[in-house]
Image (cartoon, rainbow, N blue to C red; front, side):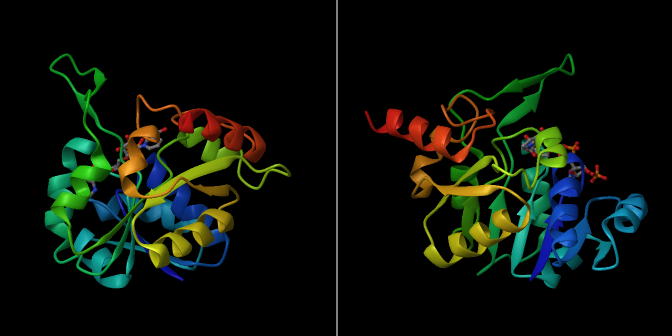
Length: 207
Ligand SMILES: NC(=O)c1ccc[n+]([C@@H]2O[C@H](COP(=O)([O-])OP(=O)(O)OC[C@H]3O[C@@H](n4cnc5c(N)ncnc54)[C@H](OP(=O)(O)O)[C@@H]3O)[C@@H](O)[C@H]2O)c1
């Protein structure tokens, strides 16, 4: 499959590399594509790098991994994203005046994105674990669970395949309205879990 990465830093670079190693064609992008030469070299010959607009043209599956506060700039640079699957890995943190990263209480980056891109299929995924876990703990014999949610079944099936190919076990938590459980402050955020433990945790959400 062809996949484009918008924001090719820690998360975008790591997940794009996992997909490339699984045989997918990956287009890395950022504001400074000239800085992505080493990433492309390491990720292999099914990858390339370019501008955000080129990335948006390359594929119908877009992995969004920019800082929350640069999302508007990134989607503006992409051009039309109508009809595309957007895998949203962003979390609603901002940098305060002292340079510290702070959670934006009550904000959901996925729900905001769905409002900004009403003709795209938003699937929230890859936001619940740290970059180091993705980089070092993929393809475990007992794979770690990776929660995802969204409103479009076909889009979620595509993302489920990509999650499996990256060496994790996808767990569908339902529609995008459930994303509050999966973003910072939610019970499903930031804990590596086996599939069994993840299903146990999910039952506590329903009570
Ligand atoms: N760190 C984690 O463990 C983790 C885990 C899960 C999810 N996340 C989320 O993933 C997102 C990225 O985090 P990260 O840790 O990967 O950050 P990062 O390493 O700083 O990478 C962000 C990348 O986005 C690019 N970028 C910034 N503004 C852009 C724009 N307007 N258009 C295109 N690209 C842009 C940056 O490159 P240029 O400056 O060259 O454009 C940079 O390579 C955040 O929303 C974060 O909350 C992080």
